[in-house]
Length: 401
Image (cartoon, rainbow, N blue to C red; front, side, top):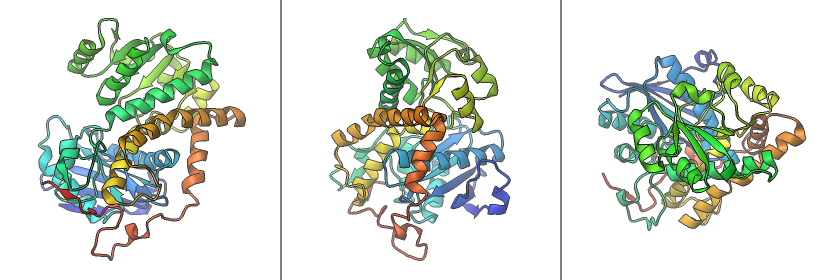
């Protein structure tokens, strides 16, 4: 396993660079390249998932990890979690690669950061992949509860997708209430869902219960067939590129990022954008562009925070460090996720009162929390210590290898 930290002078060439604390390039013995980025640890250790995707180039992957890690800082702050932001990306097709040696390398790289960054599953990786990572490092969350011994684990941990979908659902309800002032209900609306993977499909299930008309798309025909089998015949399926032009009330991006850009925004025929994917805006000015077109954009890192809440509660329970003083049981965790709707309402109200786009309002709220904060866990940056920082120490928990 080889890795090196990228020089800030080199990183300055990337628009997505934001004075990240550390950006580490690594390469597996088989030649697979990846990056770990730690954006900010003022509120606590950086937490963010490990994504595997067939990026076209190292530059594309590096741009993504810079954007995603920064987004995690903002997401954790708005979600009221004492955590910073980080991310891992791996260049490769997750459906074709031999992932075991790749995940072993990821674990070694994460471990080399000595608690500054804690990883978890993300697009292209799974709970099973995190079990492999956990064989190399304690700095991992999102593990299946049955793979951890001695922690009185309860119902915390595991696949965060259902909770991400739940938070998105609550955020959509808040956006509908804000936009329509009670004059329209979910049962009256049509939602166009882009991407029906783990989160998108769970969101569709919740929306279907409220009688929402669903228009869905995905690049996977197998995924679409499975979704139709689950959701029923009333679901309309369209081609991936057509989703931007359908007549709907809400557009819910639940796939990869960058889908809101100069070209696609002009094609949209919706009142609200509220979906679970990260980095939906290709550029910062697209927040303003949507605002001027009177399309209500719910900032992605606000509405999709359910997954990181799930990972955070697991981490706090397992580590024994709970600076947020949360009740670490499933009921409290679900209630925390359900408060996503309150966060969305607060940001949309701030946007209206200040006359600024919702993305800018969300950024202001997040920056109030983390920019002036001191690191919540000084030991996380102490690279001279031989013991794991307290936030990630096993705390009596044994990883089952």
